[in-house]
Structure formats: C-alpha cells, structure tokens
Image (cartoon, rainbow, N blue to C red; front, side):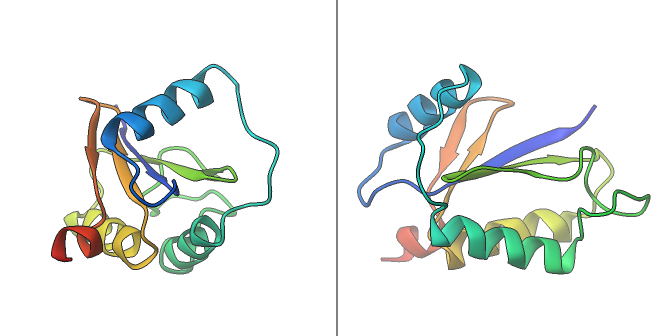
Length: 118
C-alpha cells in the first residue's frame, strides 16, 4: 500500500480547511483553468531532479509515476519502503516553495516549515 501526500499552492493566509476544500474539489474533478503556479512548477522540478518520475522504473520512491501535477498542486504516491530522506526532502522543498502539505491518510494539513518559523 502506498503512502500518499500532496503539496498545495494556495493564497497567503490559507487555512487547513482551505486545503481540504481544494482537495475535495480536485477529487470531484473541479480544476480551475489557470496557469501553473510557479511554486508548484519549482517544487515539481526540484523533487523530480532528485527523484525522477519519468520514465517509471524500479528504485524510485514513486508508487505511481509520473507524478500528478496540476496548476495548484502535486500529488505524490510513495512506495511504503521509501527512505525517510525522501519524506524529509519533500518537506524541505515544500518549505522552500511555500507549499502546504496534505496527508490524505488522516486529513492532516501542515504549513510549510518556512511559515512555522515566521
């Protein structure tokens, strides 16, 4: 069974409930037609530079590849045996790009470490 996470680029001041609402809209197939948020693009490029998602092959941390990338988020489905370093890198990059983390296993939302430190 995979371990899933998603990172979200929402407006300044977004709350955990804003993230959960965006996740619900995504699951319902409601996606705003807009240009990709530069934070999402930067995160995707950075995470896949360290952990390529194309072409799909053994040895990557991804249970599903390529990663699902939308204008405002990236969904990450990780193999259950992925190294802790992968999760630390995802969290670090989320902080660098000011993205909020969503854990669908329990519905938790985590602000990026950069916001916590402010």
